[in-house]
Image 1 (cartoon, rainbow, N blue to C red):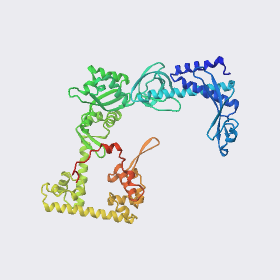
Image 2: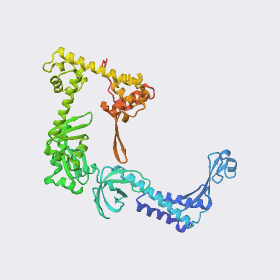
Image 3: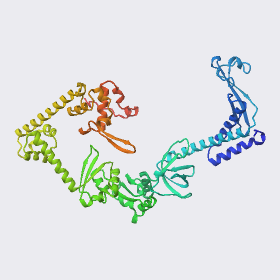
Length: 542
């Protein structure tokens, strides 16, 4: 194929046709054509040459040029695309390093192979331009619902035509075993839009909790207007879901508004989600109250919240246990996702037995360590004392409120508790020293003697050893082995150390050793934060 006057205009017509079909800039198609023609010319004139092609945007005329750069003598490497200052003098007046010499060369005739190569270049450029346009169009639509047509199904993944491109609904993002045929209409949540080198770059989902939230926003005007807010969603896709809502208008019932007249609003969402049963729950800032609502339809007798551990114990009547747990643990699992807490469910009988066991264990502890009779030890436990530290270091007044305890008895109790604790601490330190523990570790702030002993038993004998520990080694954690979650026991986990505390202590040790600059740990303060601070009043903080 030769670039002649007969087909010069065809180039522009072809470029415009492709651009219209793919909805991209015609200039990008022309640039692709220029690159493909330049590649064909290089195969004719030599790949070492710098051949460039320029297509006139009005006439379609293609101009082939050879470009050579002027370089210093020692930098000359490519004789076809570079020349020295001396060589350039025969073509240019007063040439300098960095100048370029451009000369027109005859157009080339494209053989079958060159034409095929040119076609591939153009198609590749067009695909890239199309993908860029698709990304720009959809990048701000992540987090919304889109309607599309099913094009085909590949290995369980559904390819969806979304109008300006293709999107993918992966097999694990479909509800249950739902299947689609070509040209079926489908409604999905745009979970992510990202640049990918090949294949679809719009990722859809029908199992995401946000999909349900967006569906309710479409069906319930009050949610769209911001009068009602969806605070949390938990789903077992295709089976059951729980959604927590709150109303900012006292005259509007959030649950009733989401259910709708005769259940019309919630039914529309259920139909879209293949019959997924939905529990609509009123949100409450008080976590125990919210959890009681989340465990509906089961009735809860008592809730005990441990905020530090992020755990919550729920006591239910024996006949309500199976309802609270749900089929295959579904009800309690969804309630846990909704509240963000680990939930332990037990019957009233189990809770009573556990409390009795704890009561007996604490009574035995006080009898043995404080040399008390059973009645007096039980009295201490009944008043809420759980360990020797509480007895030994509590305010004296808290012991005096116990019936039959005068000031002398209270002081004797505290003296016995402190003596025992000090003896235990000394024994732990002696054991740690016998194992080789150094003073740098023993004197480190935050470690109790028992902790130092536990560390020494594990071979951590100095502050340097401690500073090299990972937080999970100290506080424990979870790892995945062969697809299963495996518990890693922490050295200091029995002492109630959290991951955050372990991180802080390890970092403090590294700072003391000079491994870390304390300035690097301070959060950066932006100029805006400084400007936004109100000046202190005169005398404030003096």
